[in-house]
View 1 (cartoon, helix red, strand yellow):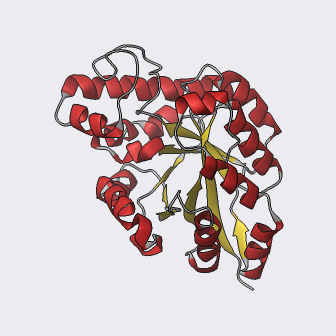
View 2 (cartoon, helix red, strand yellow):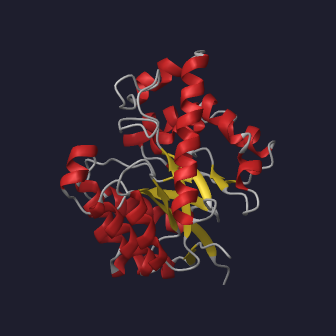
Length: 277
């Protein structure tokens, strides 16, 4: 029986201790392929230390963050008060503005350096919070990633979404992200980077049953090496201060640690992808 591989990647590691704790638990239990790390928080060095408990095959990546949090680079034309803009504001500020583009590149450089300093190596992959890695300014940053990673292996990059696997409830959102990602896969492959996808995992966060349903459909039907994004976590005080996505994180965590999830994998001959070191 042919086994299909699914990259099940948890976003937002280090967003809060409760989120990091839940993700690490799932990594240790072999329920995730890996996690993308937000490296701009004061808690990141300690969260990185805890990642040493993760299995050797877990993919530990960089989750580029350009919205809604305090900038690692401090005050700038990108973040006049030190706080990164909303996604809508980011799109407006980066449109043809060279000064803002330079500030974005500096912020991404600092987040990358923060990962390398804490982990002692390059990330295994790179993606973006709210999909900001698809933006033109981020694509320019990616152009130097091959040289930046040396002598470590070059990270792979999360590619564009596939609309075919998005439900009607979130089709408009998936289509918006698909528009952000137009030409992304092709342009990054031209720089020598390995792009993995398609990206899936869009679902209605207001429906408590939607996550299990969309993941089980994906386990049954997705092409091998698809990337399914998820956001498991436990709610704590810092999460409540930093992010509005709360209840869906606990629902995802409970399902991913459940027997129902492993049964779905086994029933469909699907394995959670890991990396080789």
